[in-house]
Image (cartoon, rainbow, N blue to C red; front, top):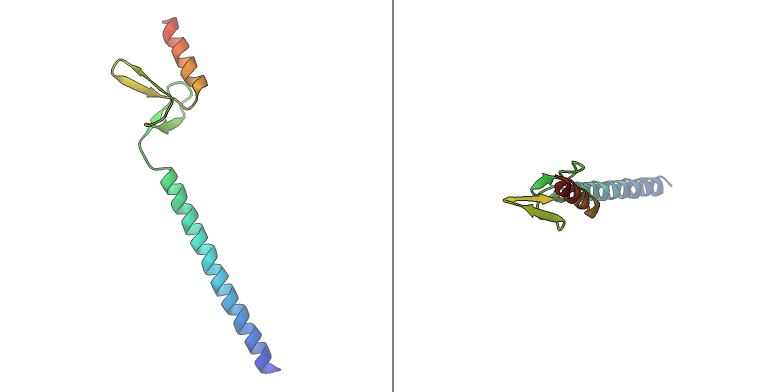
Amino acid sequence: MLKFLIFIAAIFILYKLLTGDLKKKKEVKDKEHENLAATGVMTKDPVCGTYVPVGSDIRIKEGDNVHCFCSYECRDSYLKKLEAK
């Protein structure tokens, strides 16, 4: 009976060690993914102030400056302000 209890305890400890290691690996992987998502050159949307990637699809060129926008609404708002000037 004592051998059986020791065997069960050993299995339980191994299980906890393995599952704990898997959780740590998953947490590290998630953090790396977050870090990758946050890398790159960012620029500030001139309308709402949100930071967007420089290579954003929503952008306009005004003279030598290129303005990047977070949404079409922000871009349209900026264009309306330019027309009003």
